[in-house]
Length: 500
Ligand code: UN1
Image (cartoon, rainbow, N blue to C red; front, side):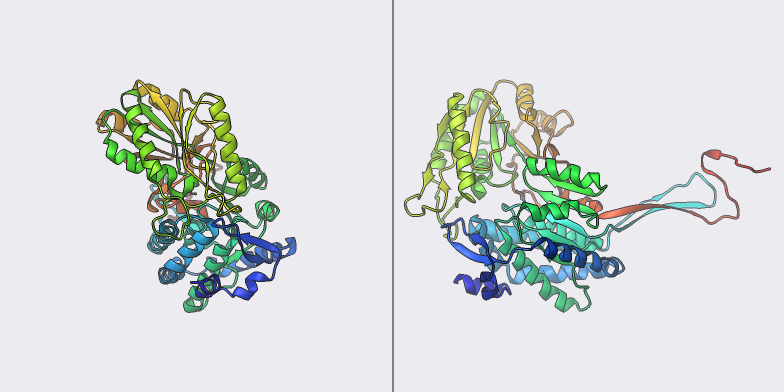
């Protein structure tokens, strides 16, 4: 399938994707695959206004009916799974299995949200006053802004969008400037779903194409009651205070520095497979990517040797080829940052295996790399910093308490895992005294979470929770209602006020 056919299959007009001066390149070979019209400030303003305009009608649409739109979107995603997955691969560079896996994640969250549309439950609460009833109700929050990163260009949007839809909130979406095409494709698929739905208001999803300044317009706009932003900790440090200064809400998914503890009792066969997927999958560009291996000294050498052998056998190359396991990095800046980090950690005494550029002759404008393993004697500042590239640091430990200390001694708190067959270690790791992350796994790697749980992390990861469990509450406002059905007016706390 050529590109124009792919665009057409997703409901995009190929000619319209060539009319602008905002270039989109494919990390596979560096070629320009579209020139979009970027949104001016006035365009962005108009789109936010359209989102705000859609709110009253959508708010007043019953939640199960709102869920029907998400069901129809899920149908479109099922029907276009291969095409959208392929476009994710072309625009982002992740391998096809992961591109289509990302679309499956979207389908899953749509299914979840459809069920949720009939389960936006509030509590009923015992009142201390006779003849009174207390309850809480959940109402739509208002139009919201969603800012997404290049690495999960559609799944993370869908976590937000599917929940926002059933919660009654129109969405203004600013995708990464590196991956706007897949966003336009999602919008086109939603348009089909809206047609089948019948009476959806215009403006339920507005996509704005642009860079950081465009994102800032969303951040500062009082009409957007929640800004859900995925990206670096540096981005979150700017977005958080700005949104809070106008008393907006934030949902932040920022950097991770995810680790795995490998204990002496671990099943090393399983651990090696889990490490490979978590450390080199998506070319190390997941926020949940495994970056630190904290491995007991008794198994350290054996495990690292086995990993080196496994790394040698990894097929690096065109992510559209089925045998490929590692596609390109997103761009030159990612490559430069990886090389700079490797240079510094080597100077700090780290023993670096791999990390070199690959396929540079064939693709001078694309950045393929051999994933790196770096054996470190200590957790240096570079190890404590997230470099968004496939670098896996291996650090030894002697006793379990030390392993947990090293594990938690980073500023980020997203995903974590332990490989052990010792129930005490496993339970300690998942306990309050164990991992301080938002995602804590036993005998699986830190990446590849299912949508059913709440996704997000602590510390510099930003504290947000998206996707499953009760993450929907971030998209609604809660009202506590007290209803007096008696003929008296008793006051709470037994207060008497001007009576007898
Ligand atoms: C991300 O990298 O921003 O748990 C999201 C995972 C995926 C989502 C990653 N389900 O790795």
